[in-house]
Length: 163
Image 1 (tube, rainbow, N blue to C red):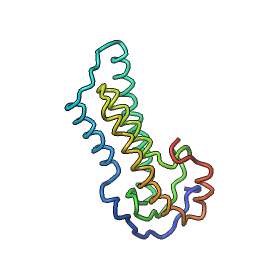
Image 2: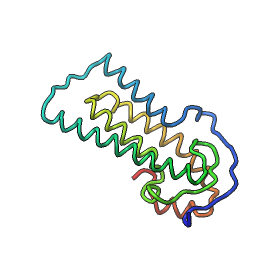
Image 3: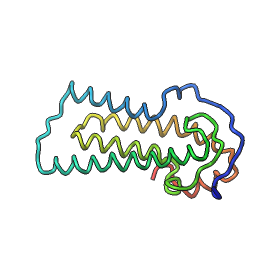
Image 4: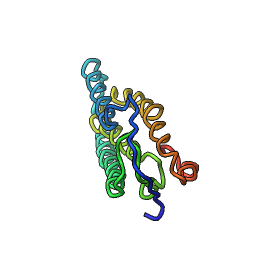
């Protein structure tokens, strides 16, 4: 943990962060499925459909692998995985070397993969709203909490928010 820094934990939840972020992705996807049922987008089975299903399945596995890896690093570091709660450790290794938000990148990849594997269009439209919420409401709360780490500004300058 040489690249990680520690500090005492303190709790500070933003009032609008009551739903865990993975559930925001699930809710967005399920609303998209509902729209798909109500307003079906015609799709014909072609050779591309099979390729899209396979690529989608691979994206689901890859996305959950990245998100799980990032989650395990937080678990091992003993820091919070809840947006708005103060972190005890600034984790900068593993997938955090490439993105400041690998859990969200992983969930986004899995979400896109699921839509591809099931050949669903509407959930992709809802993904834009999910990402807007995460990017403009959740991440700023998390970054404000991390700003008190002495190395966070250097880390933030070196590693992009998404990819």
